[in-house]
Amino acid sequence: MNALVATNRNFKLAARLLGLDSKLEKSLLIPFREIKVECTIPKDDGTLASFVGFRVQHDNARGPMKGGIRYHPEVEHDEVNALAQLMTWKTAVANIPYGGAKGGIGCDPRDLSISELERLTRVFTQKIHDLIGIHADVPAPDMGTGPQTMAWMLDEYSKFHGYSPAVVTGKPIDLGGSLGRDAATGRGVLFATEALLNEHGKAISGKKIGFGNVGSWAARLIHEKGGKIVAVSDITGAIKNSKGIDIPRLLNHVKENKGVKGFEGADSLGPESILVEDCDILIPAALGGIINRENANEIKAKFIIEAANHPTDPEADEILSKKGVIILPDIYANSGGVTVSYFEWVQNIQGFLWDEEKVNNELKTYMTKAFKDVKKMCQVHNCDLRMGAFTLGVNRVARATVMRGWEA
Ligand SMILES: NC(=O)C1=CN([C@@H]2O[C@H](COP(=O)(O)OP(=O)(O)OC[C@H]3O[C@@H](n4cnc5c(N)ncnc54)[C@H](O)[C@@H]3O)[C@@H](O)[C@H]2O)C=CC1
Ligand SMILES: O=C(O)CCC(=O)C(=O)O
Image (cartoon, rainbow, N blue to C red; front, side):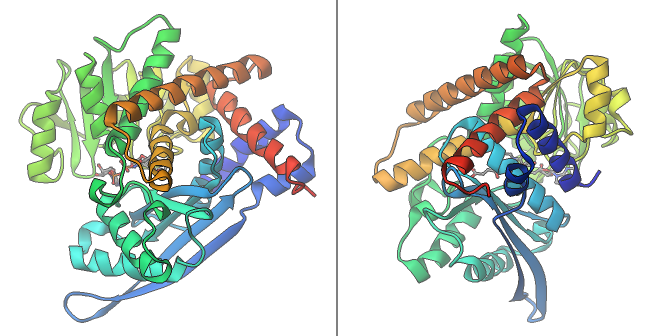
């Protein structure tokens, strides 16, 4: 199912549970601004190449718009729109003073040299610099981008507006990045998983965990807590060891070989079959829509923790719910990244650096509070965790929208 159709469907279900009137519903759904730009750069061989870049600014009722920039061949209009909308509900679930946005460029970063990536990022920033800003829209990394991308964006933006470290988050520490931001999404996934398991009287230790892609930080932290990671995949392939993968060794292998393929401590398996591996907890952590009606019936995990954005199609949601699988939704489960981005922005504005312990402790406080808030909405509306998170986020944004007199 198209990402935007799926996201709108979840929003409308939540709006119905909340009893929102149709005018308010419409004003919450329509994006504030959609930007599409052509980015043409000289390649290293002297030829020209053109790429389409997007920034969708979905909503700013609760504060500056916030969300990552993705470099991936599948980046397109509807998906960026869906991801921007999810950011609006996510920042509200986390209860941080932001709205939602998302951006991206349709390109394969693995096919571009470092200098080509730098030129592309600078051209993209030149085209959107007057529409982003510390109190307007604050980008961050997402798939295919990272601290270096944010450093180029910061530098290019600063040429127009003066040195402005708070205009992006997820920066290198030397340019005002926050300690703990690189691990934050994975650490948040750990805290979210612990909160859920705790409610079911279980602990992470000894659980068999199947990983979709990445989540290397989540893998490392869950491994340190005694979780047994039985399968992992990325774009290079998928591997499995039912006795448990040696995660520190795997991380070294990935560093040297740019992927999990060829790791000696595990068997290789087909990329599709990783999702249906025998495990207690499945953590998809890459692309959207990978859990769908084609594979939902085969999934053996009892818990799914959505580290990726919109990995589960609404049709799969229904199938999994009937099977009794509990899904911790993206807009709560992966909110650790944007929460520490908020801490980074606060530190930049204050001109004061927090130590890593403070960052991690604050993150735990936010994740624990958000879990309780989501659970409360599940009780009030007698709904699952996805609708608990959606009603929580949508209700907070709806209240701000009405108070600002924007619903008409
Ligand atoms: N970086 C962050 O702070 C946050 C990221 N997320 C979400 O987490 C997910 C992963 O993002 P990052 O870790 O930042 O990205 P990343 O670029 O660091 O890692 C992406 C991973 O996906 C794999 N991948 C890409 N295309 C693939 C394909 N076609 N098949 C299989 N694997 C593929 C890559 O090999 C890589 O391991 C995304 O859904 C992103 O939106 C969510 C919240 C915050
Ligand atoms: O850190 C941020 O601002 C955004 C992270 C992001 O793109 C996401 O949560 O999906």
